[in-house]
Image (cartoon, rainbow, N blue to C red; front, side, top):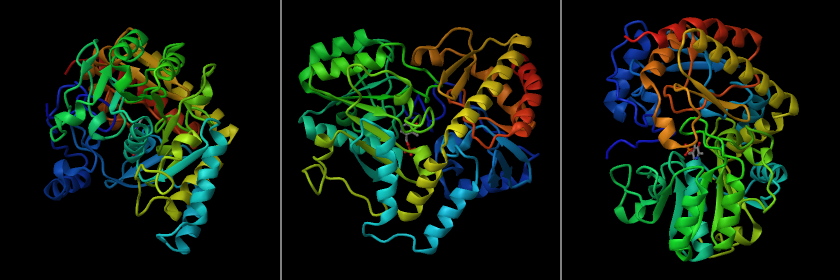
Length: 456
Ligand SMILES: *Cc1c(COP(=O)(O)O)cnc(C)c1O
């Protein structure tokens, strides 16, 4: 146990942990890391930032604008993390900045209801057909945690099903991945998670409806909800096989369990209505959805929502308690609203062009360096698996050459392109990635592909 073996912000999955080497070419970052390590565990406030999967010194950023990050040593990088999704319009977008400034000038937090949260909720509900109501929270973790409580309160059942390799935040009950292949009661993946809590979680292989049928046949009357990433992006991008989402809907409905679609990463990024908008839903949509990342525009705001009769169970209307001092914060809501309003058809078209150009060139460079790889997509989200076969679930995702990724990552970083520091992450682009930024990425690829091909 110890280190979670999967997903987003855990950032290590099964890659060997590389001891960070002091990097002398970024002295200001190295000095900040040293100071940070004294007062913050591991020097970071979220584990994947520590570069444990790739080694070396994480870059401390001083500023960002459009597609560019600038670190404290003055190095510039084309950003392919985009804060793990939220910066869909690029950094410090003028319209969002203006919205934040004008909201902040009117006060930071009231502890009473205010208008911006209503506008943000209306914007979300108007984009998501199956969502009648939302409750705003402060992080994706809170959104999934609250959605689970609500599902349990609504059904009067305790057990939750999740899929291996899906990340839903650091919620106790959801910090569990699978053994291999078979339905199993999960052991917690992190120290400090009570066995009882992980014991209410069934972990199943992704894209495997037969396993889900079997779990429901055995324990259907105890299962409150199935939670899934609408399209997993936290083991790398592993889209649902045709019919999978539909199967989840049918099986949960047959057994009186709720379906929770976690769109924290995909929401408002894969399409104006998230991954939901890219699939057909003949048997109906999910009961509950969770959102975060893009809908906060870089500020800590998130949401969960869905069917009105389920949401009616929430306090103060119903018996399921949920609350937050800063929830619906007026400044964060203004940032989120300005970001969503800025997500025009042209923005989505640009994301498609940029991601396609970068993915195609990456594939071409890796092919000419004879590096096995597979690229997978969910809307404009994509990831590069360093293996030559498709990835349909967590076991496949772990079966890749993370050493090749590490070499590739550092060669890109050294040329001013900041990829996610783990082989198990989506790459994110923004509409501010102009031709100059894309060209900068393309020009770095051949040398990085050769580095990936050359064991050190
Ligand atoms: C990022 C993420 C979360 C957690 O969100 P936080 O804001 O980091 O708590 C939950 N689910 C998915 C699918 C995510 O990508």
